[in-house]
Image (cartoon, rainbow, N blue to C red; front, side, top):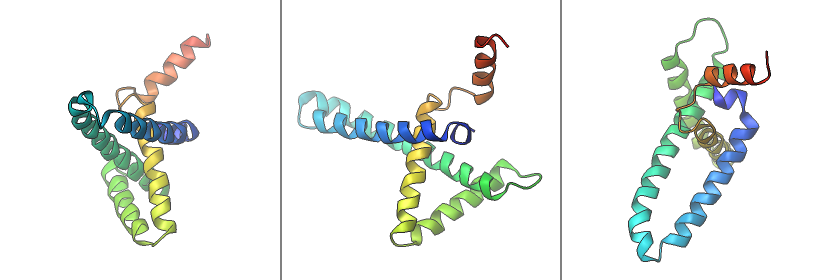
Length: 131
């Protein structure tokens, strides 16, 4: 839902998060502090990547299944299949998968790692605007 409602913000956060992660890993890799920080950072990046892939697959599956009653599992599985097929296309498909991955990763970051619910955010905005 975050990817659909805040697509541009998700893309910006995805690119920014990736650049920040690369810089952070680059700065800490050769130091004693890096010995302690790099393994947890890599684990965090792997989890964000997994959640970003799930968000991208859900987004893609929901866009294709825009018809009547669709289940979350059906949308997710269709999105995974489409991402897998897209990754088989030599250059453009892999570029599209990378872009969708960054948008998914950004959506995870925007939603505070999945802790913020879109409905809760909408009700907060409603009360803040005095509606």
